[in-house]
Length: 167
View 1 (cartoon, rainbow, N blue to C red):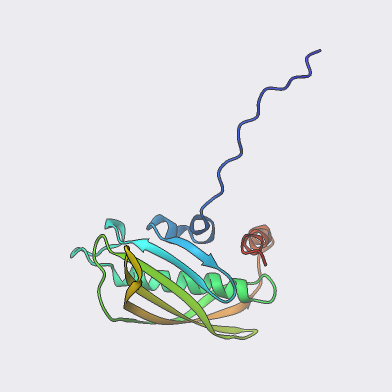
View 2 (view 1 turned 180 degrees about the horizontal axis):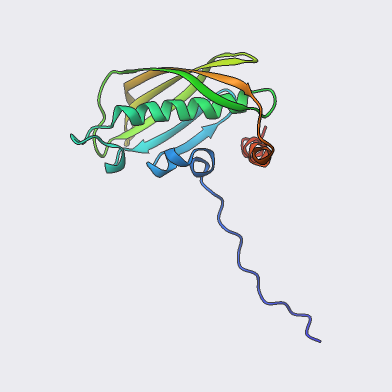
């Protein structure tokens, strides 16, 4: 009897963090670079999917990035896996970014409470040849309710997110 088994296909490549953590952001081309309870950051090359008709970054996309990054951070900062939900988003659009611009975003906690968290999120237009040259284009505050129960079906995903963040 032949003991040889057919070769197994290689495992699928790891999913990019944005694809796993926030499918909507990933669909727009946003990539997450860092995620922890203290900071969540990422970047976007402004493309036609996220522009308004005048080839400028749509303000709603800036708001989506702000709420997405704050939600990821709030989930990671919660003492135990709990669902989070944004209850207020305030955003100031200070400058524009246009098609082809490189935008970086960073979310940091202002207050991490047991029930409510507040995160500050900033978006900059960055010079791709020199990351030190940045222009603030939007600043926001996101308030999140962070004590919502997880459905049984969501607990595995919650554990995987915490593992990915190495918490």
